Amino acid sequence: MALAIASREVDGVTVLDLSGRITLGEGSVQLRDAIRDLISKGQTHILLDLGDVNYIDSSGLGELVSAYTTAKNQGAGLKLLKLNKKVHDLLQLTKLYTVFDIYDDEASAVASFK
Image (tube, rainbow, N blue to C red; front, top):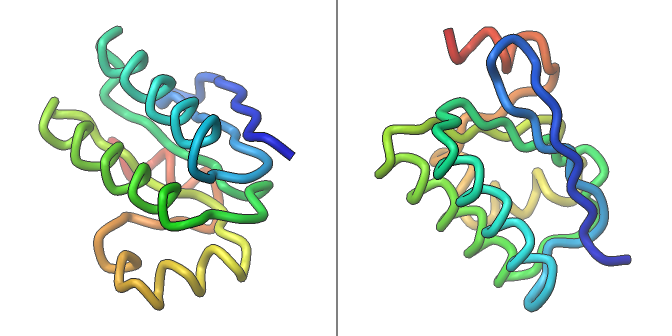
């Protein structure tokens, strides 16, 4: 299943609901374009809901790191929400768990931007 991205606004925070796979090719390109588009429109609070993402390959991981770096360099914040066990373990294994702000519930994630 390819990556599907739905965007919504919660208290001034743009939440991207991702579902499917973030992999080499279309998935990582879609994510990159979505985040760059938000930043170019002046959105500085971006929350990626990964609750329905069932697989991330090395290219997808690279894209998450790239998105985080791009956001940070533009003065924006990018945080992760609702990691499933597979994605959580992957981020711990690669030590990226220490790079991202990661939340389990949306309310506290949105509040963290204030």
